[in-house]
Amino acid sequence: MSEGIFLALSTFVMQSSIAAYLLAASLLYLIGTISVTIVGNISLNDALAIVSPDSPEGTTLWVRYLIDWTFWNHVRTIAALLTAILFTIALC
Image (cartoon, rainbow, N blue to C red):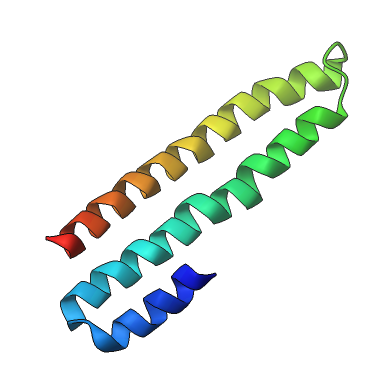
């Protein structure tokens, strides 16, 4: 929570170009990693935990799980990489 307050204050205090990179990186991190984890990956994990692995539903869900979870994991990885790039640009 304190990071968000620091970010909000930094947009007023810092140079506008640096603040823009910090704001973009922070939003990308929140949306692209944390939100994707909460909305995408955790819900997939919860659905998989409910079914029996030996059942036909479990087999079907597992196949779908691998496709969906891998997609969302790639989104999260790319968002984290772009976030690191934006934070690095802000530091330079």
